[in-house]
Length: 449
Image (tube, rainbow, N blue to C red; front, side, top):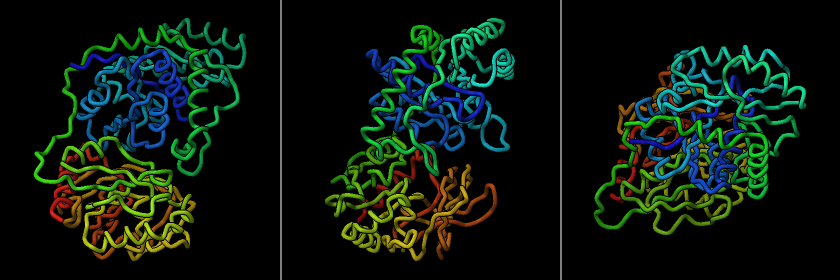
């Protein structure tokens, strides 16, 4: 049974203040001495970095599209085990989900799967009495979604607050916090959202501290904790990576990290470790060698376009990556990793493993995908079906090699990515918890070298 007290922080729409409130709550409750489990609805890699900074625990994603609804509660139970409180930051508007698929992957669906009370963060900057109609509409839209209270954001003055509170008295929902209009906490954005924590270091620490102070000053933490404790126990068993019996030495799997490669799900490293690998993180911006004994390489997503000159200048590491890939070693590359393996990125030489060039584009490619592995690779057997997510402003030419990685079935039919020797490279972000066999297969190929 999962009995962790929990809250889902949602909003009527994006840019209402969910990230500030959710991260601030995590920081404020952690400062009280509580063990807080941080979660994020959807495929977002960046917000969980701020959540991790606020709580000192891995930020984890709950994605009902990529992992399936049945895995949401088990993944939540895995992440929240032993914690005093879990805070789940929603995505977009409360009822917004995968395009054209109803509630699938919405914050509302995740809240129902977790049987968690929802706190609605409302941008009140341009309304007074109308706030009651807005909140009533969201609270009554789906009777299975339990909105337990409201946090009013961007409130202008004492009088503005009084008008809002008077209006909400008629709604029957308590006001659990009021956050005054103030200069934005310093969380700069760029082409794919917030700048990741790994790139900001001390500034990110200051930003999270400021979020915590703002939320602590404006919110009733005792009432929020009381609401979290109303969440009933869940009968779901916690997800756990299946451990493979160790036979001989553990192969070293090098995982790219640092400021250029910040996109990773915590479960991936856990699955690799469970499959028998020794996971070693390295920084392509700083390290001139791969970790000693590297038998396989995982290069996830991030912002190589921001660091193209620095990545290019690290010629010793580029040569080491190329030599490893040409030797037939297993290499799994997603999005940023795909660009790093290309011949060049925005005119800067990269590893040259793939005969392709990449460049920045004005067009944002964003959305969930259904995919099937076109051919055998160390990551996936031909015919393996997975769901994933694309999120980039770059273009790779050509977009697929002689042996593509994936055949896409949504939103259009196409082939994409590269499979050559031991390399599987693609724009598609996947969540291995949904298909743990890919981690086991990858480690088996590493062990066979």
